[in-house]
Image 1 (tube, helix red, strand yellow):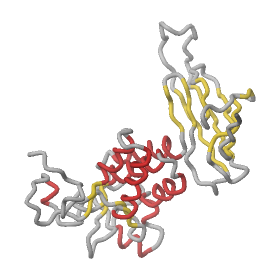
Image 2 (tube, one colour; image 1 turned 45 degrees about the vertical axis):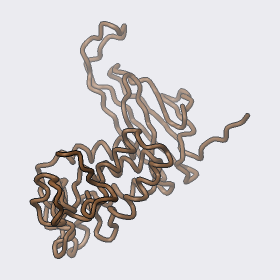
Image 3 (cartoon, one colour; image 1 turned 90 degrees about the vertical axis):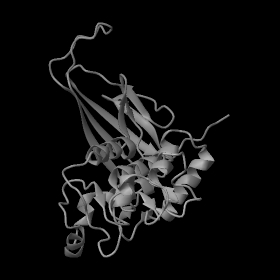
Length: 273
């Protein structure tokens, strides 16, 4: 490793890499304007809607004098060498959501969902692996474009869950706060989530006695005006909880009870002077 750049426009091979693009957004390193340019480049060069895949890099390594490591040993378009590396594909979706590209993030998540690769006999013939588990990679080189690679052996399954739950549906825990910040398209009328919080041992810094049973949050998100820009109303157990910066934020309790969280989406409220 002599410090030579990879994933740079200066490179004839691997002129763009999804890892660098997505993480420049997720890490906050890119300025807002630069972040938009970064993901526009991903759209142009790495996302292939027709083939239903998000490439890790392009062009693939073939005869570069650089030594990128073991991925150069793969045939061009296979696995990390220009195919879809599903970890990176999911980080692209997460970056899209982080920029507020709600419709695109949801569409890309659906696109790389393995179930969507086996909807027809033709898709089954092309994909050739189980559609009910994540594939670590998808081939991007003819005649095997769209063929799934390793299955049952990828950490991208965990990232699929996190990206779907946290980045698109918008549900996450921040310390003792439950946050719901949806990033869904305008045409979603509603969705519901059951969030289970396991009981914990007694916390010396908390006067609340620990519960013996799990705590449940029954969350319903409604989009009556077909505009999902922001959270505009929240109630928890019928008590109003004003949104904070367009998100729902409520105490994350562990009291062994069931709490009902009702969230309404709508346009970003106008700021009045």
